[in-house]
Length: 86
Image (cartoon, rainbow, N blue to C red; front, side):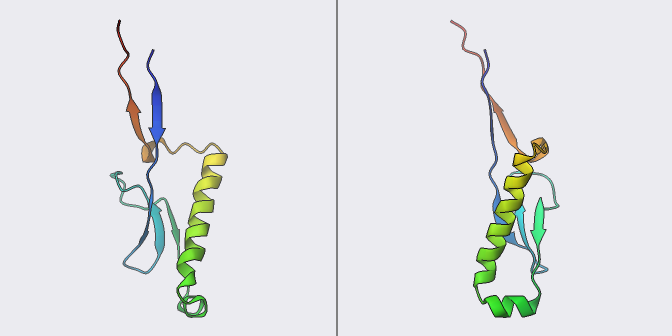
C-alpha cells in the first residue's frame, strides 16, 4: 500500500512593484498565488505594521482556499512513497 503525502511550503515575498505576495518557492509558476497591495498613504499610517497586516491577510486567503477545497495541486509538491514489499 502506498502512502500519499502532500506538503505545501509557501513564502511571503515583496515584489518589485511593492506588492506583497504568497508564492510556492519550488513552483515553476511565475505568478504568485495571492497578492496584496497597500497605498503609500496606508503604509505611512501603519509604519512597519503593514507587513503584519499583509501577512494576516495572505494567510487568511490561503486558509480560506484550503477550507473551500480549492484544488491547489499544481502548487503542491507531492511525494509518493514506494510500497514496502516483504
